[in-house]
Image (spheres, rainbow, N blue to C red):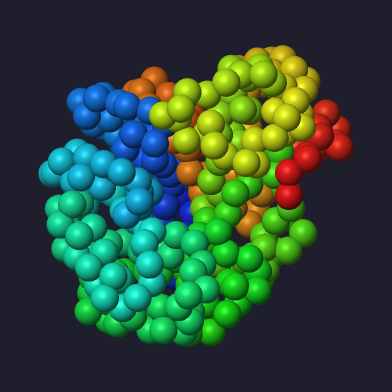
Length: 308
């Protein structure tokens, strides 16, 4: 579905909400990539919504993100599929406290999609899911999701409750899930919200292999951004930036459109710190890459995916 002001939408999972192919990620808007003024964060969210996004993702652990969104979505809550995550421990007591805090911060009485941020082996997944299913039955959650789960962990969680979606890291540089998780999700009708489709910005073409991130930027301490990954990103951008430009788009938009072109991917989570970035992300969602396009891209990047 495409209208004048809206992006294409896809159903999240078997019977979840219809969400746009671009989801606004808010880690950076909460300060995860360095300090940002609240006014700028609010303008960025509004820009994304005005440009056609109906899907916003945040988390308990995203610093000031939930509180900022609560202010931003006043009067617009019914236009947004709002997703947040349980980032802390999985004890029943914390789950209850976390959902109540998220509802309060977000200024809403329900969460469209509530996700487990990452597996926590200290608590049995059966118990965690049981508590989340209770919250769903109470109407505080409309759909349940997971994030950073393997295929085996996804199957286990699904045995104890309906999983609408999962959030895996997926990009031109990290394609390991093409072999297992993506086919599994396609077969079992689990929505996929791909995150880090630009590999933390490396596929934007803005960084050199030797770029140093500031100490307040979480990318400075991410172990997966190895020298090999950084060098591969530079080479991919060198090869594909002219191709993207010839089609009227940026390298960042190409990397985003490429991720969404996978039939298993429902939506790409795209971070933004400025209104211009939010608008650029949305335009990527309007770019449909044909099979021929994908074949040409694959020919250019074959063998340049060091991440798993």
